[in-house]
Image (tube, rainbow, N blue to C red; front, top):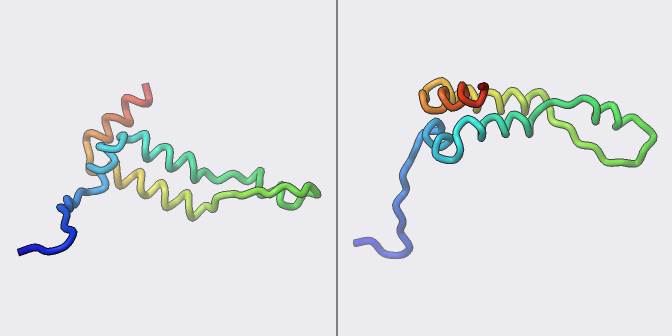
Length: 86
């Protein structure tokens, strides 16, 4: 007998989750958001009082790893990436 708030959980792989959420476009958007941009970094040393943020190469590397892991074992995501290229 179950008591309390119960719910069913279905565990899925990263490949399947990416495919269901939007395919390769999700991984590419993550890479876009983590893209290393050194121009804002250079502005940190300027005399303006603007606040600038920049992503790190480590963050880009991790995001590329997520993209590659989502593509290498999923023919659906791989084909989606190829279609996006056209």
